[in-house]
Length: 330
Image (cartoon, rainbow, N blue to C red; front, side, top):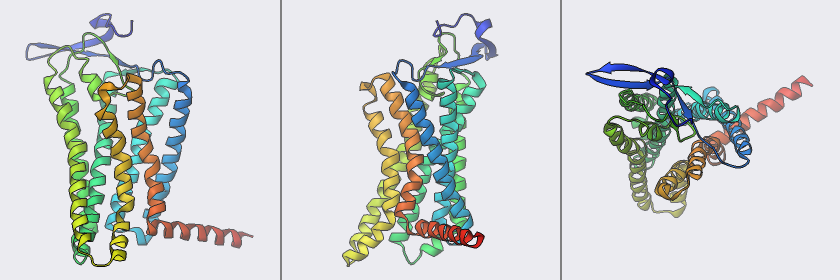
């Protein structure tokens, strides 16, 4: 059976640390979407979403790079979000396709931990980036006269760098704690990737530090940024209430509409899934979490194109140049 370890010599190796034997397997088996009827259609759906996500986010990044009018602090954060979405989708979807569509369910111990690290860094950055965008809107609406002084390119670059450092350090701790675990029973990960929770629960030695970090991690990468976003919009709401004209309020609020939609699309599936996780069948939970990982990157650029006037104008410029080029070629 896949869930049994035949022997330490055939499955892994041992290291001695402070008179304690650590059993590290040569590989893990990702069980993923087992038992789901017509699952190949779902893999095809994920592939389509991935292609859409890469194209859309690539367009947004290209517009920000080449259009001087978009080289502002706000669009530094938008560019970073698009970059994170592309990297996150590229880390997840091709690996899922390779693992399950082509039946490559074995992954080495070191590759599993590396994959987990990079995926969780991206997950952390997606959440922190939404908090960065809410900070931008908070300053723009509550301190409009000081916005150009407070939120400058250097400030936004520094904040993005700090977010990356936090994401990397937090997830280095997560992976570091996993390396002290011993696996002497099952090596089957009940998820669609090297997920932290299913992975540490396989350990046969003391995994309490990992259990603690599994509680702390969502607080750091999901709840804390979400709380900051909610507080930001409470302050924004208070600032808008002081504006006399209804039309002025709506105009100011419209600048936040794209960001609010991004927050809802990112956090709502995660919160719903985790709130009913205990009652959900295993496969339903896996599908819900995988959709929560791939749908936001595909929708985020579309929202910014439709909701943000600057992006619309930039796209119109590109199409105009393309039409002019075709006319000249004729």
